[in-house]
Length: 536
Image (cartoon, rainbow, N blue to C red; front, side):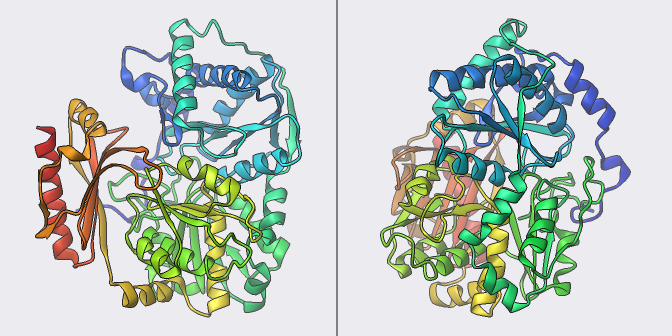
């Protein structure tokens, strides 16, 4: 019997002593691909227990970042923040020692607090509005990953995730440094830092992007669960600063996350979009008018309503878009709606109903950065519960995912409309139909994964999908023509997309049908056959 959704037990908890010892002592073996520096869509991730996230890695990556930023003419300070994962604190110390030895000033939290990813992105954008020497940032987090993992991400002066040109250069240079025993890494014990109040600057600025007055006057009873992550003290300050009836339902920070309920695969994972990981939060949905969750670095959101429970991320994105584009008169009239191509077609219908241009891009929030900077894309969202949008005057807020922002937005929506986001999504289904959506995994060898990543849509020879004619076979995103690292097949009633996993020997099948659950199962079954046939 599955233990998903049940409280974690002592046997599920990571050995922190072994984890931290491995970080300090283990030297990576570059002959093992899993131990090399690899930047995915959200930086380098791994565990010290697997030799994939060690002091050696972080020193080399930081040195590579220093060299990269120098090559780009970036001469301002580096904003550095870390989340609550056990490996984040030692990784931050490593990074600060390397930055100092290279003469790079690091701006660290003035309160010795954890720093959410959106607060760091907000800080970069705020600083660079007026500074002549541009700043960039390092975010130390594996996001929602299990407690045994660490993560390290670089955000250039635009404030968002680095593009693949930058991350490829940094990873290659870091691996070269490691291969030489890190002899090219400069490091010193005396740090070069200045304080920056990430929390106050972020929270005090929320009034420029959200209607906080409407929330306060509504008297909504709001609950916020940081899931043991970096947003814990931000929620307390939001309540105090704005006088909201907001309760931090679980203020505990535990690097083992012993208070969590297990995710779908019986692992501890701080995913606010997962019903299993959010089980203890959902159980309290009737205690509040609205209840929200965030992951460890607060770049993802989970929305829980008394009448609907935990919302599917796609459902909430559609509601947020419908609301924002009808309640933000200061936004550009031609500002597009950004979505990743594995997000729900419900968003397409909402965009059409609003008369707005839809901008569909590959997976990865980095694609939304230019549009959020200049206001040509006012909202960018991913199916994995990550999104951000521009201020009420149309200027940039963050260029990375902001789970705190999307969570507070749910309160604004409820306060202004008098209805829950769940009820508003039900309205959308009455207008456009109720889609069934799911992501599943299918086995794939490394060779098959590589082939799928390079697959051209023209290689798909099937003419029908689940009884309907295929209308599009895509290997590039319609919005910007960038390769999607897989394929997407579309009919009038359904679609599927297949992409290789970056960490496991599987490929991911995203599928959606507006013809019900049974039809979705048929779409998934035929999707696997179509992809396997193309890879044969």
